[in-house]
Length: 248
Image (cartoon, rainbow, N blue to C red; front, side, top):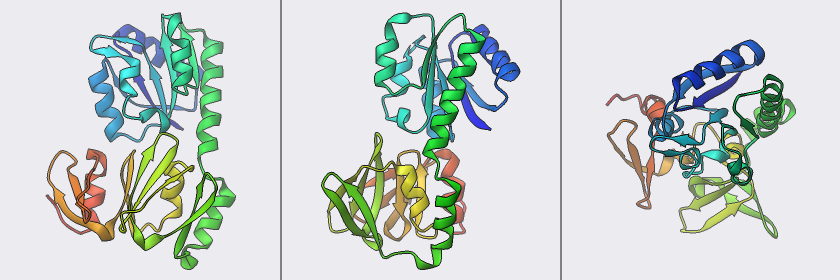
């Protein structure tokens, strides 16, 4: 099932889309909905979303404001709007599709099929997953990072944290060295040892060995040994604290 969020300011519009998805797109699992930009940002920062249906015009901004934090590189987007003139901008935001209201059932099904394919392509194949699983006991001491002119070998234990930069990943090391990888952050979530690295939210993975301080909050944030502050999403807070067998 595809974990899906609807962002639409009109209740009637949300109801229509939910009805169409329920009747004609069986692989959709609706996990949340929002009526404005502010609500949408809160949902996306705390929810593991795979597909976003996004309206353009909303009371506190527009659909593109929702994407300003780089969210559009962590899930697929289908724009649903009455405005034709934003199609090019939607393409530049790597949207899976751009549907005009009133929604056409066939076009909706085609858009969902396209998004589902793109979602699947982002996931490691069963062969890749098996290889990763089989090699856990033989975890290499370094990662081979794809860079423009070849491969950069980075010792795993030297990595402080990793940050999503669009479809790329910035890797920060304890010797103040940084490496920009052409792989997305999600790939490193599978490659790095689970006992040592933790994904705090959609944008960051941290090395638990370099966490210096945890600060309370809805999700809170951690200060790393180099002084960097990394947010923890509300959804990830309990998992993070459970690693240390503590409650706050």
